[in-house]
Image 1 (cartoon, rainbow, N blue to C red):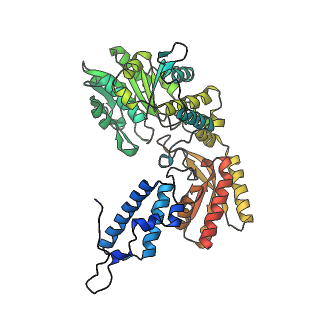
Image 2: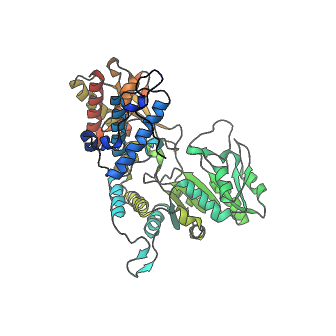
Image 3: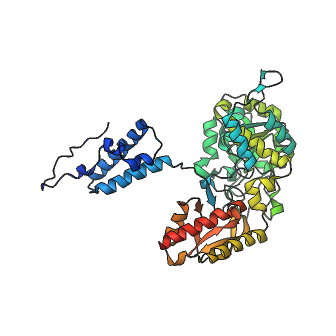
Length: 472
């Protein structure tokens, strides 16, 4: 219910009520500057202004005494904020390749085009053009995944958490799942394997210890209520020292001896050998399937480099059972996601992942190339009388992938010209284009490894404008 106030009332000392500073909705709708700042239709604009005025009334009720000009400025800001899309493109200069808070993996231009085309058009999503009969939703992706990983079947859902939940619900509800105690992990956003296990209806049976688990621990825990064995790849943490873990091949052998499938949650979804880029070798989907995993789950927007998705790949028998579960419909990916995953997989099939997929372009970039770009940008800024140095640094992979692994990089280092670095970083984040960097050792670093070369000009302009504002 809209709050009202007697704007003619006076306070105890006889001065006019502070509520009189509030403008009427009618006067605001007639305000030329405000109307020029918005494309909202009058009903939506009226509701926005009413809500904003309610906020102002509450502020005054709490003791604030804003002037009419201050109130008008906040109302105008509320209108402009509604007009500005929050998820506008930014430049990621943080040095974190897969930055969860910045949307994880940006997709290739071809993938973005495929997703946009699917969004604006009808597509043969669940119909075969040749026969005009229902079917085919996963046909293209399944074919590409078979080429790339050897998977007999593939199902795509909306993210990897959904993939794990669906697999457990379809294959283990009401039964037991054996997992190493050291792999009952939590990843970003409070996603905990034990919680997902409970939600699926399966019972978690933890074996071994946090730091050492053997294949014999799994074997000893199997009984008639066991549905499957599970392995969770530690994609967002490392344990070092006195450790031991059963290999996937060993667990597959344990499962096969008792007729039980082995499921592995890989998380990162790598399709390339990360060791070739100087990183620790990350298990790939193909590796796990070749080792005998019945089903593998992975994210589409981490090391796979595509849109947000959960990939379920493996033997047709098990994937078919998973796809037939009622929850599969609730968790399934839409046409834009499927088009994006397919377009991303084609980059791998064509052998062009490191040339076309943004995260792989960043990871594969030679350090000398990154240094050369940083040198050019610093020189250009110096010509414009903006002091900028080049600093060696280390970029991280991020996104719950390859924990602790870094790549050599180079950053523009700004000291702010004697101005507040936090304020400078904020100006960059609010600029056009917006730029996110990091403050380290009393300098604002803009890491070039996570900036695509085609964004260098935009980065230079953003820095020039932000530093100019700091001296204005």
